[in-house]
Length: 394
Image 1 (cartoon, rainbow, N blue to C red):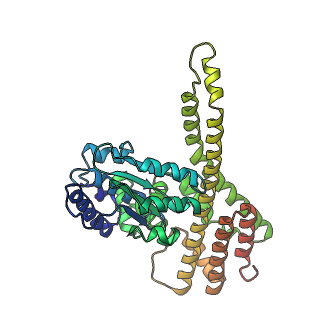
Image 2 (image 1 turned 135 degrees about the horizontal axis):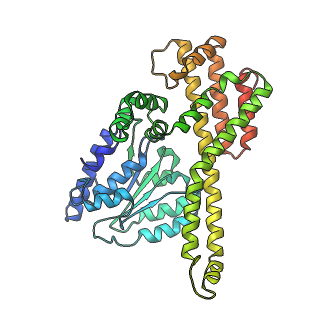
Image 3 (image 1 turned 135 degrees about the vertical axis):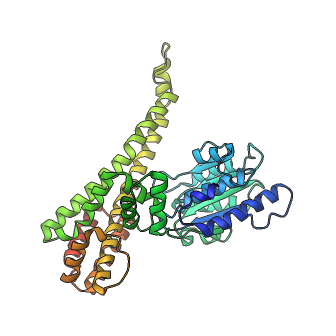
């Protein structure tokens, strides 16, 4: 087993990364190292494993055997403790120029263990324009042993000047069979549950894992897919919108509450809360008031992003539902990701035309655009549910 064997359905990308890791080892030995470069851009749809692929490549670069999967180097990269790998995870809606400049300074340092210094930047598309310009300068003139691994849903999400200086690794959507196999072999999920979760998430391995292991996640998805049949009038549409926004907020709260608690406790400990000695505890905690305020601001920004992402995931489930309605209307022989709601699909297919279904899909996509533009979620989703009820009047 190598570090690339854990990538789900990404055999072609794994071949490219293995070759590049070998070229990197050759460059360290004084050779040409053709095929190795200092900046990489990992792209692919949600759940394709962009971060996992970048992390595997980081391990392969730092491992003497190009990613054996069992040495100390590979293990440290996997658990996030390797001193030469810095993982950047934008917590809020964007990544600021101040944060980027600080990151660039840290990236300029020499590797601790003598091979490479790797910066793994998740969601690099969240960098602001000013931050992207600061990042561009670092990529244009990198230190000789620094490697940038940027992750983004699509190449076009990055500035063209950054994209042109990176080698792009495009990840495919894993097949249902590949995701189901992963759930069975790695998570001990029963085959029928694994198959259902893989089909429902359309190749999104991370969401499939959560859906297979979390009964509450399955319940929330079922509630979202039941929404179309409950749209029987304006009042029902408003109530459905309220439930959808509330459920997404609760999902986000559950995802962030524990992390917030741990971060706050750790920061309080750093600034002396609980320490003994006359005046020591109070003085140190007072000195950390600014840091605590900064942490709270970051947590609020992260909560906003997670709420938005949770609601967007629910809207994508609705898009999948109406796409399946369209498939039923045309009698297409395709895999239905919401096939466990077959009765609802057929009922809606009979009650409207393919044109109605396409209009409904457009309505949901428009709602996603409004939410991305910071329209009030309740207002945006209410407009969507009413238009879903009456697709010809929107």
